[in-house]
Length: 572
Image (tube, rainbow, N blue to C red):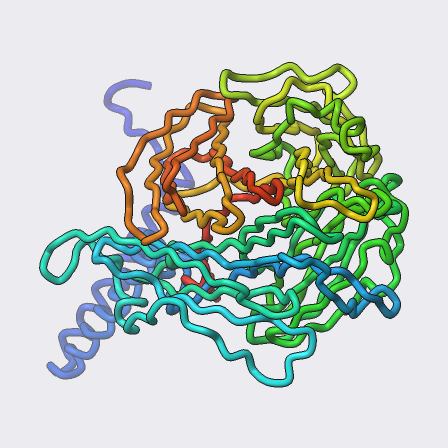
């Protein structure tokens, strides 16, 4: 093809030119029609085009930035409610059962010429010097009317109870005060005592109570001290004995203002025990009920009871005493134990004459004993003792145990060197535990019909929860007691200890350093109570009490936050 030759259009080009010409003609016709319309019609046409464009723009924008729902925090948050009064229950004094009907409704009587009992209460103020209001009442087996509390300390104004925590008094002065009081024979016929403590500054008041019983003659010769324990919907009690010569009485108390339905689960050497009369026990407000443990699990060396309640929370304990023939062989109170795969019993005393007690007193089968119960699964566990200088060797036969599901067993610790220890049980499933210390008490003026003037007393200590923050301890106050506070921790920890005297005056604060895997004993001669404070998470505490009437032990419990609010979840 030469330069002078024009290229011939293709069929496709011809079709394209025709289409372009047609589009131009239609556009010119539309413009002529628009020029012939009036202003109003023209504006309307323009508005219509603009509206279409606006809708199109909104549609495009909506596709680019889709509308989102507002951010809503649906996590549960506490709906703030007024702080509430906390209730704990102090076990009644030991009594002899006179009889029972189907293992329930036990009647009691005392059998001692010199038995005495007392309730000791201690409390600490906030930084403005406000002592929490405290009151108590005796729980009854069949309350005919609403309990009438007896006031111990004055009730505080509502704004002080529910307001923010005080940082100082109204004059700007920081005031730290305390209260200690002993109430002799607070209840007749051995009823448990319900102790109520009002909040201060929107948090539970720092207070505690201890009941004590002492006698030097009769079948209940001995001494027992028991901490007032918080009411809850579940308790574990372990270490009860139902063999010949030992009487164990389970007591359950409802200190709340609503009915409570209680169910008992019983565990023995072979696992769970089918027990009649252990279900649907209804307790009215302020009511208590007692049952013989032998009626639930007879002829057992070690029995554990799980107490569960619906409705109002309850408290529970087991009072136990032993006779070897007609010779008193110990009285004590078993208190709730803490369950877990790693549990700590903060106090165990091995007497220097442990192996000679049976020979000297004529009492067989008595030795320092550890009780361990599986709460459900089969368990393999190791046992370690903590002393003031660290871990202590345990005899090989007592260093490890195997438990069937729900089974309870005992470990004889009489081969351990004399001293005061804490016990750690490390298991591959949950267990509860208690330790039974022993003391040989020759009571020269306690001659029975056989002329025997010797006696053995026992001291049960349960596995405990760690203490938290500030914790008050009220010490026993009758029968010339010598109370020793034992602190133990798996890790290094620091505990501040402020003694409280019997006039309610605070002493000089001291600091106790704890090395890991140790148990340290603290004793202040003039202390009637202690205020403990720690920021550690693994400090366990207990009190061992020696007196002219016998030996006892009790746990140290921190008052937990209650009534601060209900978790409320928002959503749709």
